Length: 387
Image (cartoon, rainbow, N blue to C red; front, side, top):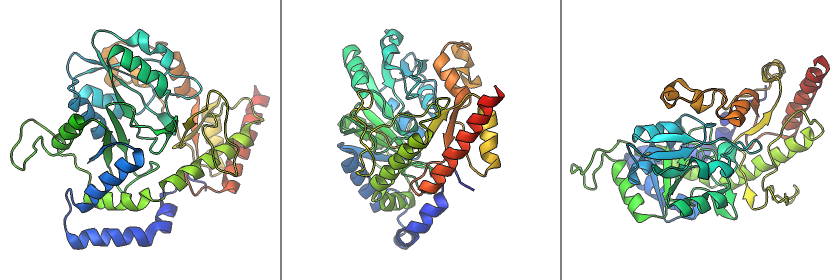
């Protein structure tokens, strides 16, 4: 069996280090906002190249608290993508704002930046780009539009920790960048966890206060906040894993390159671009579309015609796969009130019908990647013959 993600193997490699820090936390018995949380916040700020990092309870909380810190609320609009996890629009709706969707780029699955300006109204307060599958959005154009119309940028980096655009880490281009440490993420803990990155001292102070019940001083509360603090035990685990993150992301880019190479002779399979592969053993991408982008391949997602048949065939061969995401957000029941019909965002709707994510994790071997690609090639060939 080739899993989609192998967390057991990762733990087995790091077991001694992780077990040791877990025991240290238990021995110190300081479980809430202790020394590991403070140290991890400093280490992540340094790693990402920003002034502040605030550990919170989840990636969704990071988005929610960032929007609140920017005073975005009822009557406001936030532009985002319809092709992502519900947490993105959950956060927008939780502050009382309205998500406004624009369609996606068919190659990157990220928001189509050429459509941003047409979606702006006098109620627009922010752009919330999602770096889906670990591929950085076109932040140059997004920043340009945001500055022109005086809009805030809140980046959803849940799947893209460590990715760079023009040499700068994602999450540091706007007012706030939001991370998730869900176990399967490139940097994952042993439960839920998240973080807000910011260079803005006011955003930092507000999020830091909101995450602990809206008070700067214990038992003194200036507004209604949340109980959303990164757990001390999770912070200790994440500190261990952070030391390995760059190596893991490099391995993911190598695997993506191999998949692309194994599948390049099959035009029926749309592959993700070879974004920023820079290892000496792997050619560097220099095309204009990819220049300056270093993706981290949280997922390696292809587009196939008959996804149900392909996925079934992979499963029969003991190869796991997943669909991220089967229903775009504008067609979800929860957003029925927006009145957006089928056909409103055709690229996102097509992606939801044809996208398929293949096994992708740092410990994936070249032999496993070849087996996945070879099985996919054969299934595609059979599909073409049947057609």
